Length: 281
Length: 281
Image (cartoon, rainbow over all chains, first blue to last red; front, side):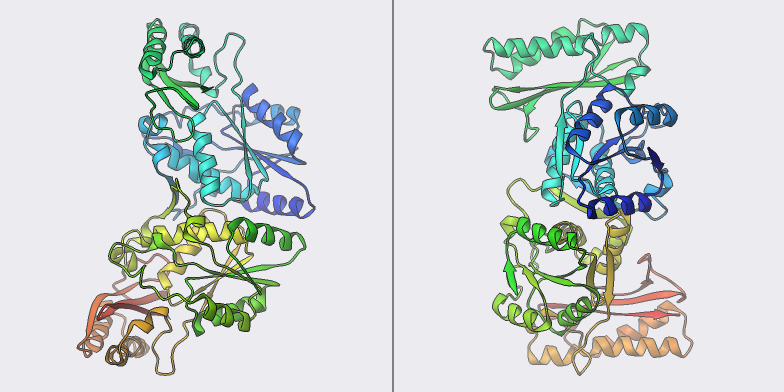
């Protein structure tokens, strides 16, 4: 497995293997790989001849005061894990290669970015869409793999691909959880033991919401009440948002019907965690 | 020569010919072709195996009160001209195919769009960059051809290609002029006889500026004075802007040195014309 830093070099490589008729898969990550990422890679292996994993902590998707500096990084460990999972090439560019002096082009997706993490983190999805478009142009994937954990992100990326006529398919991969239910995240390492224990309320609340809906509840306000009730059992939990939105438009719903996304962001100390569930009602 | 409306169909076609190792050239136009466009097509023929010309009056690059509705359209005439010039396929999508319901993705280029036409026509270059990115993803060109007549546009497109790592080359093609010096434009048909006659001051002013600089003048204010003096000889001319900017950054210069862009936009009646000259000082 090779590690390549240069965007031009990866692009040459990708264009070459595509000319040979091979299918290229891209797994975009910010590194510090966990089982969620490895599941994306395994999925890519089943669909593609060549799998490129990008590892890049993208500065333009972090706001002022967010954790860009502290975000965990360990390329050696990541390279071992990626190799073990069957990655063919790691693309690990430097910030100065992705955003050289004079850089000034950004991709904005409108209504889908208004709520949830888009509201809590202004500019976040502009940074995500921009870097992902760059990665697509660089790695020329036929398929790109995104985790359902970042539910709004994958909806936005799918929209961008369709709107800009990008010639590739997005593959959504289900959330991978720890044995006790906490969604895998590189940010989980920030949690101390007590925060980690209390963070289980997130998945507990989603399971409770799911079972409420299974029992016939269709009123979004009542489902939301239940989510908040369970999260509030954790004294350290500070809710950023708890929302019930349409799974396609990311606009709030009053009555649950069709594809519904229940999404939440909650802080435990300095750590902001997100989790979600999609229900077909 | 085929005329194809469907983005998906052109994309399939382009990906297929590229897999055969052929070079694809794209000439993006808004139609109502003139000799300037035909020069772009001829240039494309020399560099590429397959030439796609797009014909699309892009609504999102027109502002409120601009000439989107009146913009001249004649696909039959365009098809004859394009065929004669050697175009292989015309891509002529419907607005509803380029911007279907729910469309919401836009590309913004920052400082390069602040001045000149970007200042006069807010949102114009956002619309241009967005449609051009879509056309690039649809037609998959190795080379795309743009006229130097829209000087700021080509600078912006080059920046977008570089910033977003798009795998293609932009080719700039010099301005083509009528025998009397008026820059070719689809909008020239709007001019009545008197406006058409007076519009010659545009190229006259640029030639005078060039000769002033050739004589050693390096002060931008004095060159600008000369441009305005000559344009003002036409009683119908109403100046939108006359600017002397750096040819790379599109920021105003005080002293002429390096690559300098002298650009102007002037109204004659309802018709807004642009013209420019690039000087290597």
